[in-house]
Image (tube, rainbow, N blue to C red; front, side, top):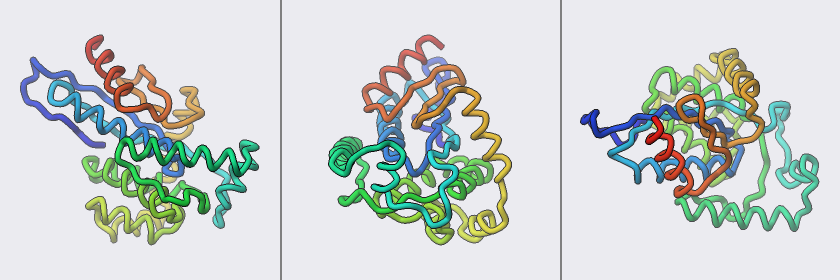
Length: 228
C-alpha cells in the first residue's frame, strides 16, 4: 500500500481506497500501475489514495520450470510469432509513454508467480508503505530484466531494493508464510468476477479495467471522487 498526494486540510481533500489487482507476469499490469501512479500525482494534493495490491495469477498451474513465453502464448491464445511481435512493439511503446522500460527482446520465459504474491502480501502486512515499491521492483525484474519470478534470490533482491528486510523476505519465502491468505484473496477476486488484469477497484465498488493511460485513470478517479 502507498499513500500519495497527502494533504492535511480535510475540507479540501478526498481520499480513495484503491485495490490494484494484478499479476507480476502481466505486462499490461506494469503499464497500468505506472499510469495509475502518474494519474495520482496529477490529482494531488486535492485527492489522496490508499493503494494496496491484490493477487491474481494468470497461470496458477505453471510448473517450476516455467515455459518459453512465445510457446506459452501460442498454446494459450493461439497467437502467431508475427502477432506476438506486433503486441510486444505495442507494449514497449505503451510502457515508454508512462516511463516503464520493457526488455528490448520481450520474449524470455514465463514462470509461476505465487511466491511473488506471498512476498507482496508480507510487505502489505509489515510495511504497507513499501508495497508499491516492491510491486514495481518485481515488475521491473520480470519485464525489464526478464528474471524468473519463482527464483527466491530474485525475489529477495526485489524486496531489498524496495527497502524491505532481506532476511525476513527470505524466511517468508522459505516457510510458505501467507500461502493461505493469498489463496483466499485470489478466490475473493474471482468471486467478484475478475478474470483479467489489471483490475483497479476503487472504494470497493468501482472497477477500472485494463492498463489504461494516465488520462483515463485521472478522469475516472476524479469522477469517483466527485461522486463521493
